[in-house]
Amino acid sequence: EPKKLWGGRFSGKTDPLMEAFNESIHFDRRMYDADITGSQAYVKALHQQAILTKDEQDILIRGLELVRQEWKDNKFQLKPGDEDIHTANERRLGELVGPVAGKLHTGRSRNDQVATDMRLWLREEGRRLLGFLCELIQSITTRAQSDIDILMPGYTHLQRAQPIRWSHLLMSYAFWFKDDAERLTQLLARTNRLPLGSGALAGNPFRVSRSFLAKELGFDSVLPNSLFGVSDRDFVAEFLNWGTMTMMHISRLAEDLILYSSAEFGFVTLADAYTTGSSLMPQKKNPDSLELLRGKAGRVFGGMAGFLMSYKGVPSTYNKDLQEDKEPMFDVADTLSGSLQIAAAVILTLTVHKNKMQAALTDDMLATDLADYLVRKGVPFRETHHISGSAVRLAEQKGCQLSHLSLTELKSLHPSFDADVADVWNFERSVEHRASIGGTSKATVQQQIDQVNTWLRGA
Ligand code: ARG
Picture 1: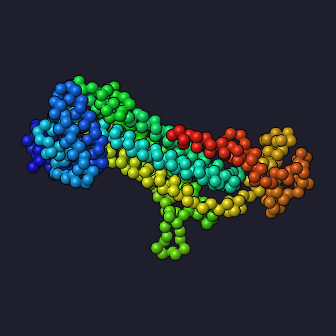
Picture 2 (picture 1 turned 120 degrees about the vertical axis):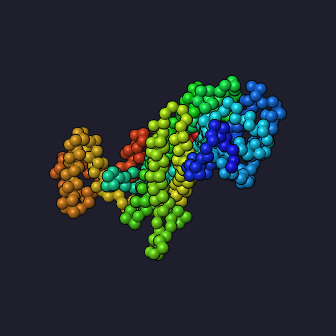
């Protein structure tokens, strides 16, 4: 029967069922590196306060390094009673360096330890995810640049609305993801603050230098209240929320591309690498990558909602409910890591069917341009909207395209129509007219691409 870290006051044994229910080692082992790094810094802080001699400090730091190496080499042997990563590492350290290991936890609690480990872990993981997010944005701007001349129907309510540049659509996603990147950067800054030295809740009784700890561990600042230090998991909630928002954007992008890759649209074809076939229907090529991106969004939203529900009722400081923070954090990180990389790859390898997009443009999508034509002749827009609507109805009645109405027919709707109305029937012209900032003209889409590329270089 292994001795429990906290076993002193207990005479009765833990029910094995409870043991299994309580343990977190099978998931928090992922933080072994952070846990050891945090402990090594703490050892130094204890030495500064003469709780540890120089020799003891060196022994503990070296011992912890051996433990880290065992994890790295996949040689760390878990034992019954290794409740979590903190107890496992301390138990192993004791086996390696002897009783001096018992001094490591002086003035520290697993409460400030676990909060520290999580912040260290998320800081590293967050930086990796930010890299993937920037690569996704990069893949979008690359594609937008090379495809800038391709026009397509823009939709509202999934009904053909106005012609746009395909690049313009792509860039709309780039701006969402840029906001996501900024959110991630901001939450990582709030994450990067030090809880260690908060003790269990009331603070550290050995006057360890928390500024030293912060510096040693690369934190930007020290959390200024020990209760806040051990209690706060807002950084997890914010991270899950970031994952939620980002997946929502990925999911909407996926939905667009799933529609566009159907034969009914036929605008894009996914590379074989990101599709799968059917076990029954030989002709099928299914956009599974995109469907998974869309589907996994739900999983991430669930992780966030689940954690917030666990978190909302927790009284001050540490309560075991908080152990429920790690699995969603890991799962959301893993899901985002995969999703961001797949989304980038899908976009870079898509085939775009320019002619199909072009062919889907219909004259009625220029009805607004027809109204705008009369506006330029001085007719109020509310009137021109109505007149253009009548023209659409007339064309419908005649069973012809809007552009095929004769000048006489148009003049019967309003005397200001003239021969130059012929210029309206040009999709390129329509798109080029939208040249205010944010519009779909070539120059203003180029501005968007340049803006995001400049931002990427600084990110
Ligand atoms: N395994 C725990 C967790 O993940 C570590 C903190 C335990 N602290 C405690 N007071 N029991 O939250």
